[in-house]
Image (cartoon, rainbow, N blue to C red; front, top):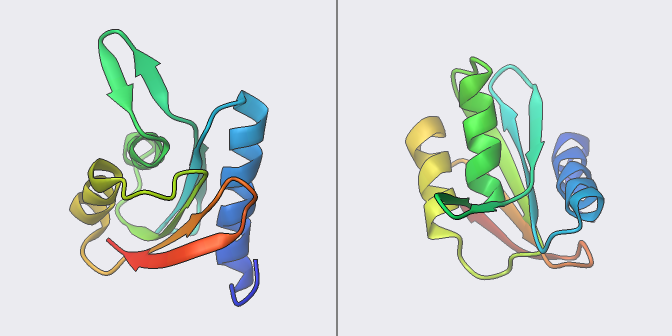
Length: 112
C-alpha cells in the first residue's frame, strides 16, 4: 500500500478485510463525499448479480450519500466496467479507483 494517502490506504484495507471475511474472490470499498466508508463483497443470486464495487456504491446511495471521493477494489484485476460505471454515474467522472490483486498489491490506479 505504498504511495497512498492514509484515507485511500484505509479503503484498500477495508476492501481486503471484507474479501477475506466473506471468503470471496473480490472486495471493494468506497468513500463518500462526507468521508464515510462502505465496504462490500459481490452478490451472486439467481435473480441478481452485482460486483463488489457495485454493491459498495449501492450501500453509499442507500445510506443517503450525495457523492463519492474514492474507491478501491481488491482481487479483481480485470476491468469492472459495471462497477466503474456505477462509480461514475453516482460520483461523477474522475473519481480515483485503486485496483489491487488478491495479495493487496496495487496493480492500477484508474479514474471512473
